[in-house]
Each structure stands twice: as structure tokens, then as C-alpha cells.
Length: 292
Image: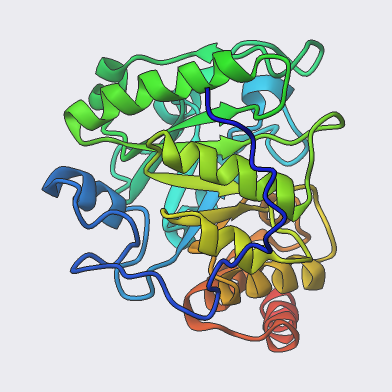
């Protein structure tokens, strides 16, 4: 059994040296087959190498979250501005038009509701269903350090094996909670474990300190979770700082669909992520779009 890392030597993440991508535009994926790269190209913009994922899968454990009471009313108008959707198969089948052409990231783990121990998840969708629904990626929650850590890792590796067989990506989502960390040390650990065990890309949280060491230490793309609703300027600043420090985009939900002007917000987030629009300029853009 390998020992824990007790070295006193200072870590060096070489944050000043960009990761080598090879001929494909996303790091760590150069040696995947054509189908996987094609699906990842429907999630990430090949020109910017980044993505604006619109997340509205919250109902799989929270039920009708504020802003998602009527997805047909609140979310469908946002579809033209999202690079990809992160959602459940139930919402996909019942509400999303089959004419939608961009990538689909389908929540593939679940089980307990917000009323129970959330880390006790199981695989909630098999590979045949992912193929049937034309998924670009399957999303699985992983609870590093949680009570059901090993179970959630097993969920993830089973999905990775099935997805690799058919060229479907696996998104590993690092969970946080009151008993889990949210600092750079924890996020580095969780993100690296998911990548080492084979996820195609990682969704995790932005940290105010040392976020560049998280992206540098993870050999596959990282997108950041939007998290709880915050003021629009704060959300735009977080998105800007994350991509400037190596994130390959955002997976934003509540900071878009709970905004006072969701279409204005997602349009502005796109400018921040794909065109490096600075936060203050982005906020001015948001206000202008909101009031027009």
C-alpha cells in the first residue's frame, strides 16, 4: 500500500508552463479516439477551448428548485446561448426539444434526496440509455473524503469503463459539503484523484487562493461550478478569474437562471468565458442588456 505524501519539500505545479495539448485543442485528450473527441467538441468550443455549460440538474435531489419550477418557461429561452446542457434524463425527454444540436451532459448518479445523506449515491443510468439519448458525457458525483467515498469512486470508474467502450465522455464532479473541504488543498486532491482514475474532464469549485495550482495539477480540463446565487458582478468576476487561471469554462446554473435577467446574464458569461471580457466591463454589458 503506497504511503501518504509526507514530504516536506515544497510542491511545484509549474503554473507558468502551459500544458501540452498535442493536435487536439483540449489538454489530456490527444490520445482518445475520434468519437470521444467529437463529443467533447460539442461541449467545448474548439476556437476558445472553453465552455459555458448551463446546469439545471438540481431537481435530481432538490426537487423544484427556485427558478426551475417550470423549466419549459425558465430554461428553454436560454438554450441558444449555452454551449452544452447539464441535466437529467427525465427533463431531457419531457421538455428539451430533440432539435437541440449541442452537447448533452446527463446526470448519471443519484439516489438520496436533500432529506438524506447525499453522499450515498449509486449509478442512476446505464450506458445503453446514454447512447439512446445521444449523450456527449455522463456526469457522476464523487465524494472524496466522504462516508461513501469508495462507493462513489466505484460508480465513477464503472461509468468511465462503459463510456470509453462507446466513446462517451465522463464528467467527474467533486462534491463539497459541511464535512468536506473547499480549499485549494482539498480541491487539488479531489480533482487529481478523479483524473488519475480516468474521467474525461472535471467539474469542481473555484478557490480564491491558489486556483492555478488546481488546474495545473489536473491533467484533464476543469470547469468550475457556479455554486450558490451571488451578485452578478461577483459571479462574473469568479468566472473571469477562473478561466484566467486555467479553467476551461464554467458550469453555471443558479447564477444564470436565478438572475434578474437570465438571458442577459448568460450572454455576458459567454463574453467572459470565450472572449476574456473583464469583470467590470462584463457587468456594464449585463446592465445594458438587462435594461434594453
